[in-house]
Image 1 (tube, rainbow, N blue to C red):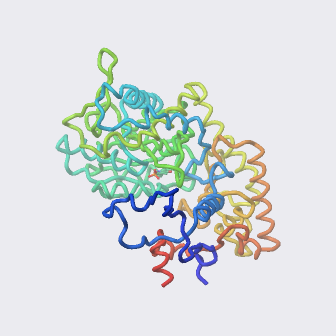
Image 2: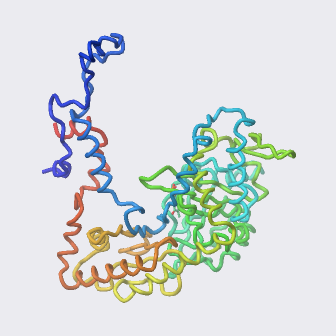
Length: 489
Ligand SMILES: *Cc1c(COP(=O)(O)O)cnc(C)c1O
């Protein structure tokens, strides 16, 4: 039996209809009023179901979903923090939501002001001169930032600089974005504590290096304490520093990448600034640059004139445009609402609270899970599977078992430095009670792994499906009713 048959997906019954225009509407034939040219010649290839069937189908599907609104979601590197509902209300205001992108600037002053103010707030938090909010996501921001990097060297006639140094712990999008930007990726090794090996970096720094991409705190949640030395080495060699600020969360209002020596960065509004992501909504990956790179940012740009009026403009030296119009404006509205809700003082508490939560979980669980890197972490950390692996219970098994207890799994098998990586990021929005429940369940799963390993290996048993064929799902996705029918035929 195939996985989708078990799901009772097929509720279509021949001849069943959601709605049909009545032939006799108190003496009036509604069907006869429809012009012949607007009538469908052939039946639509759709399931034949009643309206109630459809409502129940989608409502039940939504209940099978796991989200931040239903439970704890400690997915490392993804910052699944709570998405405040006020943000959604603000973004839905018709005064903004119904603006047409081709409207004259005079008639959209409020929207342009919001774009401008958010840009200013990000510049202030990052310690960089200017931001573009146009890129649609983190990876898109990386591509945009790397195009700025590349364009900077080319504009100076320095055309040999085509290499980008990326640490072996980097998020997978870093080398991918560099390749898409037409740059060559060179890997720099990490030390056992996860930070960049400066001795391995030095020989890589020649006159073909365009720059380095870094995450700080890095993927293991450790702050790169040698960042100032690294910045000096890269700049002295003529390269630029790119900061992957997808997870800017731990440093918000405390430490500025611009002060660490970074020239370019992107921020994920859909991680750091609480806007929904994953299945919950589109992203936004603003890119900020230091003063000497401002001209190269993509068009269009929003500026303010001497009278305080906002206008849309572009720069001839720009690398061009990376999005239609200004990017995902609704996401910017949600992020701006979040920033204003907290204010300059409270935003400084986000990082320390997230850091406290991460360290609390780490210290509470290291008696049962293998902690490869000791010492305080920032907002996230990595376990290398169970401490006792003798029963063959893997990180995947533990992740699946957590679902039975109502928790989403952490990020697993990333970073690649360890065989059984389990990357945990609780975020600042979780209460101590939730953290304690999670710690309790993680201990319980570790005990099960020791006493009754099959229970963990069989998990999950409470979810709609248990062990889907992930490769099959990726290679032959069934995304429509038509493809389901084809797959079954
Ligand atoms: C999420 C993430 C990205 C990519 O962001 P997307 O919006 O998913 O494209 C890049 N780097 C890091 C460190 C991330 O966590």
